[in-house]
Image (cartoon, rainbow, N blue to C red; front, side, top):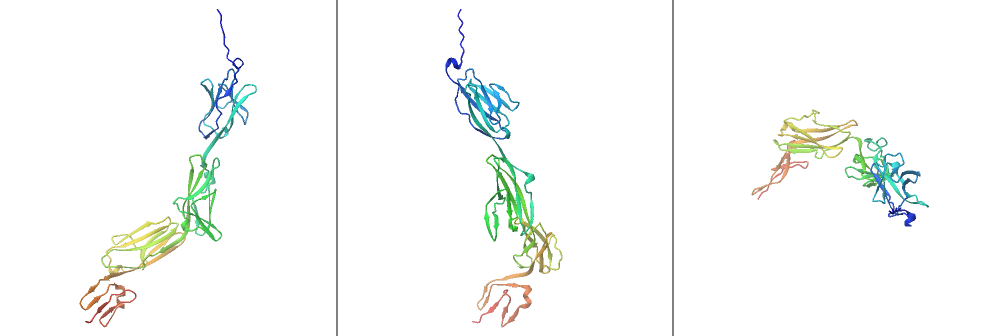
Length: 362
């Protein structure tokens, strides 16, 4: 009996091992798994090794892992495909990886592993909420780590523009760049939440919210200092208050008697901005004893302010026309009744409030 033994080798076939495809660069976020795939045709009796080129460390030969790194493994499939697996890649894993065949001379191909890190705000180096007096300066700082190095962009949470001042001029910009945002000669209009947004192309971007508090003494504005209403009706007095820090707001009569909510008075406040409110006092069923002066008062830790409103009874003259008489439209205020005089059949009223009856002779 004749036995024939076949030995497959490069020497017998005359074929050199060669790489079917280039080794591809890999970029992954830190913590993800990375793989390099090396396809070698005509390997024969040669062996495939994986080497980290920058440290010259041999990682694996054929199917055996040499390094002590438990996160590395190799797999072999389809006779000619060799895969290096790096589990939960870390920043220190980045570098050049080489797939090498032990021919003479040696054949190899290389690829780069880039391990990127999403941005992260460095809390201990980043500003928190800040308070400055009106007219002062604020310096907001935002530091972030990550790879590549994150870019920092500042925006206002309410979408308002950021005011940049240089010398005597100022410009309004939708956003600002850089780790430090400097605001000079700060006004109350710049109060609010500022967002520091860090991004480096590796999702997700991160942000931190910083509240800028601008402190100033209260300011009271009264839209109508003279308010008239008919007896028996409800009348509303309004004051606009701006203050920071938050103020204590209340109403008094001109005698400084404090007004409290009851069946006669209803008080409310409506916030109109981060630093302003609208004060409203509703006086129900207006009577003569309700007439006179009212004060809206605002106090905070920096100072106080007040507004004054005078309440009077009013009624409107209508238009009447008889054969010989004309009654003109006007406004009559009872608080001025002592200043009305009767002359030649005409009632006259002064200081822009008047009700006039004119008798026309035919």
